[in-house]
Image (cartoon, rainbow, N blue to C red; front, side):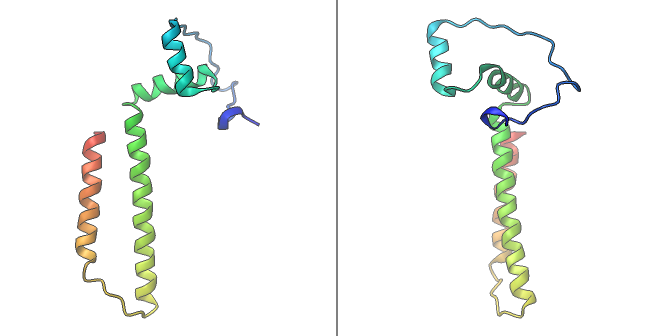
Length: 114
């Protein structure tokens, strides 16, 4: 079983053959240990560096939050469709404004990550 919830990768397809060394003073090392605890340093450092190259971890976390929000919206739309299709008397008068507010929120988040 992979340690620290990491996926086991097939090293035959893309072996890691390049070393990357860094030196830290005691203060830097302690700060990293305090933030990341007992996690293995190589995968942690690799993730941090590659996230930074991709635009920073804030981008990936914003995308994750945006995906979760869109998923919740989809669930709400499905519930509304089910209620309407079952013949329930549903008040959808505020739906247009609600969708507009969601669209505005999504566009605001997209501006942050672009």
